[in-house]
Image (cartoon, rainbow, N blue to C red):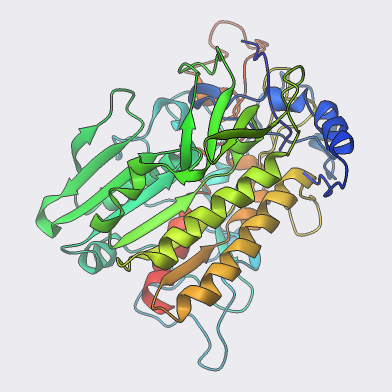
Length: 441
């Protein structure tokens, strides 16, 4: 499964260049990285534009090594308060995104057996993952408590409302986590799906709550020529001055929206503005100006945030920042793996440059829009999950994106998923943060 043309990566830091040739050279250097497909969702990503700083002992492990289990002891864990307790100081607002992953004996509120909506590729336990230590950690901000998500309170809060997750396959991964947590109180009823099951709508009848996921990996208008296995027949065509109406036409129906993307901009694409081809990202032989993924991503986010700030509909919008991957010693197609079993501690891992660039653009554009929108009653919230996600190399499916990958051969070399998250897994803490932001910010 080889892609003919791909983008720079990271699914990091390219400096702004004053000369076209320099940008082209940088992209050529990164073409190998741009071959990253998002596994079954055809998603590009990168982990090695700049070598990660990795602590021992697993940095030298072989790609075919099995995942190791983490011995757990009750004395290693801490419990957390319920949602009826105040978790922030009265004198200062807590930064929910500065903290550490701490042991938590209580574990997840659902399992792969109690939740029926986990997609095959994220159902790590069903697929045969033998260790369970990754389930017993919780994100804890440094200066306040973050209570666990309370599904009953959330459904009551969302009574007679609608919420949508808008973006790529990470958004779908996120909404599945939320569905699994809520299913412990009321199972969702699926009322719609598109032909590829990428966009869906669920109802919670007893609460009249509607939950949607809208698959729009660029957020802007795009012609994508890839099949479900990520095989491409032509370059992506991106309209940098038009949003994807698949989500904008539905926006007026939402009380809350969680929006995020970015990784797809790392793919090879031809850029269109004012109905004219203005350049591209990694398109050798096309005689087009190399503009770079950062140019297109900034243009897209400017459109996205302008849409929110100028809309008469004032939904509460959470903008989720980019999600780093954790491939080591290769990419998904070259033996890269993620067999760590504990979180990184602060300082043990550095973000690679492409992710740094992407998050930098996100934060800059968010802050500009938030400054403008706050004067107009627009409710924008930054769901800055990048750093806390960077610290969780242990929470990915790895080889267990497939069912029983080592059943026939314990030394089998299989494709790894080191970008998406096991369910249950670290992504559940994203919902702890979302609820906290809803209730107390």
